[in-house]
Image (tube, rainbow, N blue to C red; front, side, top):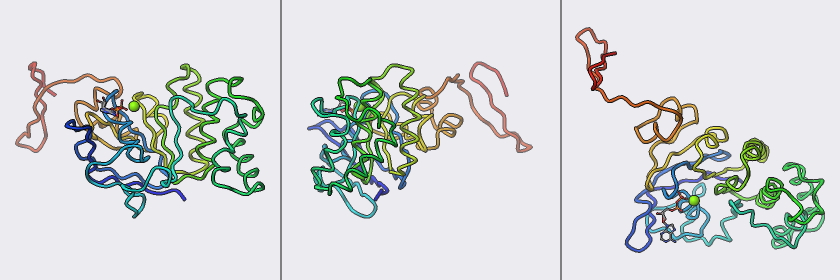
Length: 263
Ligand SMILES: Nc1ncnc2c1ncn2[C@@H]1O[C@H](COP(=O)(O)OP(=O)(O)O)[C@@H](O)[C@H]1O
Ligand SMILES: [Mg+2]
């Protein structure tokens, strides 16, 4: 069962250094939610807190109503896809996808049914008996995606999954990931520093800077109504003008630009 994710005043510290000073965000059940921001702003850190690989120094993260702060990673029922595909080189595509189900001691018939279905969803059925070394980067990432989804996780977490692919494949894989996510209907938190990728793939985007969320909105809103200077310069192509907005006596507004211009 897919869940909603609630972060309430979440804090991350490494020793004396505070990376995330108190972050609140609500991710809806079934949503494709993207954390977007420059390198080093804390995207991976937050994702790892959701996954259970990072401790939480303050506040709480809930899956629906359940506080997960102290639940170990392997009991959070998370599917993860990383930049490096992290699939087993000595196992075939099919064996890679079966792996998590074997660990969970899923009966053979059900395992076959689930693996067949997911191989079909990510469109790698024809490669199922190959070893990973005989697959392209995009195909390997499809295996990683299948392996993450086949266990029916509560949430799917993806950390820059397309960064290792060449430009053309990256664009193709965006649509593939988006289609698979919608078909499976699983709450997804996707991390990227690539604004174009975020705008094209997400239901909603949270723009991060220095461990703080600057704006959360649908792609179109982020693009057309950036909340502050940081968002407007990080997203799209923008020109900034400094000026003041004043109210005229008849209720209209006027904008005076610092260089003397007027609107
Ligand atoms: N294990 C760690 N110990 C100390 N500092 C860390 C550790 N992991 C990440 N950081 C720091 O936290 C900040 C955010 O890193 P990260 O979450 O990886 O950023 P992003 O994924 O947005 O590029 C960076 O300044 C990074 O140096
Ligand atoms: Mg990162």
